[in-house]
Amino acid sequence: MWEVCNGSIFKVFRKEVNMNLDDYKLLKTKEIVAVLDGDEDFGDFNSGQKISMPYLSGSVICDVGKRFGLVLEYDGTKSRWAYMYNLIDLGIGSSNISDVLSYLFDESNFSKNIPSSLTNEEFKEYYKRSVESAIGRINSLLHYSGKKLVIKNNKAVLVSRNKEEIELSVKNITTINRDYIKRVAENAIDNIERSNYDSALTQARTILEETFCFVLEQRNIQANNKGNIKNLYKEVKNEYRMHIDEKADRRVKMLLSGLENIVSAVAEMRNKSSDAHGVGENRLTIDKHHARLAVNSAMTMADFILSVEKKANGKLDY
Figure (tube, rainbow, N blue to C red):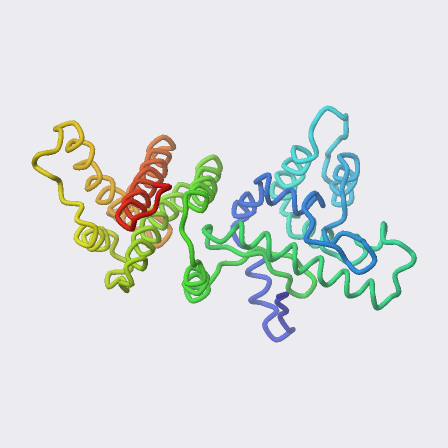
């Protein structure tokens, strides 16, 4: 749903508009750009018109930039998403990114290519559904960044999600599978490419926590240690009898013993470095390759735990 602020909290709104502009780099993913430039649709309207953002060609994207004094020349050599990346970067650099987004979501941008057969009421409904669908899709892609896109006083801004929203969204996830883990990991890697290492570590930890909780729920066990992935892993090990068999091949035992290290390392890195905690003297500074290692390790660990659950519960696709 759209979110609207009234004039009584205008000062708070101004503060949100002037938030860290680097946060808007989160929009630079092909999935989000596909929403913004009209590539992704959300079904048909009753006239056969696709519910989506207006389709933006490369030249139109450049024209949008020029509206805000941004030097973005169309030469026909780039893909549309590349022009959108440039538009976002220039918008951030000039502090006009909120204005650029606001224009993309403005009613005037939608009215240009709408069939004349639509009545005024039908257009209003089409516009409302298109914007709500687009923002909903973008926010689903932004979920693990801790940010969300909202429209306030006709301004499109990125704001922080509150803790309750994040917890509610996680509760609505009913199935954890390899595709889901892959999507979260891909979002984490995108954060790493944008140098958002803290967010990537939070996502690595989320991959493990949600997987542990999910496999326990498959045994009708309510996880007692949410928020503590080390203890969650102990619950999983006990329930699925994952203690190392002394008769197992030593190389297999070496691999299994490494699982403990993955859980401990991700938990510690998340506690000392991630955006779930404030800065301090114990804050850990990590490099890009270390953040990538943490995400890939968490993904591998989660995949293995899913296989353990499937095999133990008699599923054939483990």
